[in-house]
Image 1 (tube, rainbow, N blue to C red):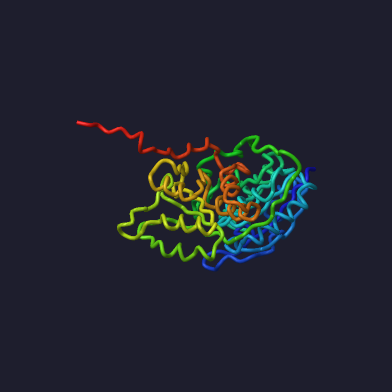
Image 2: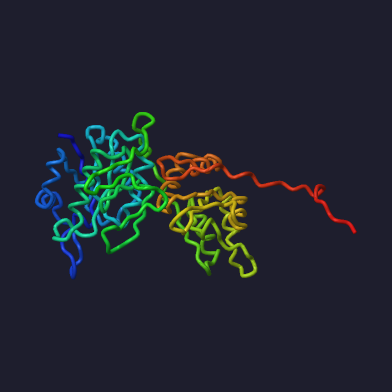
Length: 350
């Protein structure tokens, strides 16, 4: 039989209890064999306990440990399934997609909205679909949820109380597991597997909103090494100085202090185009980096990694704007800003 590594990290799927009591960790492996015996008919499954955490406790240090562990183990398996809580699932999937390159087998993350031990749980089907995806899906980091397979770094959690909790707004699904299971080819390996496990968590995610006092993010600059800015629409933010809320000083001071600023959009679909409006163009002139259509979670983790492996502003900008693991839709580079010469300006004389 094909071999699948099932790495448990925690989350609702492996918990017990419910309302009115809080969910609590349980003996996940025992429950798995009782509630989903079909898994062991699909593959020779090796169970490993990495952690037993609520996903709100997942941190970059754990991502690095997890990536290093998977890098050492995955070549011995036909596929890998990682069980995880849903709240930070997209962050972990993004992190693993950047840290594990050119995979020898699929790495599929999954979770559930209800614990495996409950009668109306979605965990059982998510586990079965994930094992199938780990055996037949593309060789990249994905999220399998509610009979769909998504590219991990393109996925967002969009619902709290429904089973179709995840979507991929700017990239098509990589698999559909209905009556038939169909999969897209996905990413192609370009060589032997590679590990990039180092991250610098000193990155801040700032969401622009009306009334934001620029003094607050400016005070953060001495304490961070990177900034991801969730701007309006195509990359807009206030630059009118009349009310004292222009964010342009944030970009200029960040550039002076060598802190890269990546701009992503608050909009659910499409992405940033810093050449479209005045504020975006001003940010670009001040050194801002377009995050294109990356999700905020992918942009945060990618910046955590980029500032470790790349030192110069040019190298950081180039890496952020390059698709490393399918996280970004590549578009032609924007044209440089035109330079106007006063002696070429024509005036009409009476």
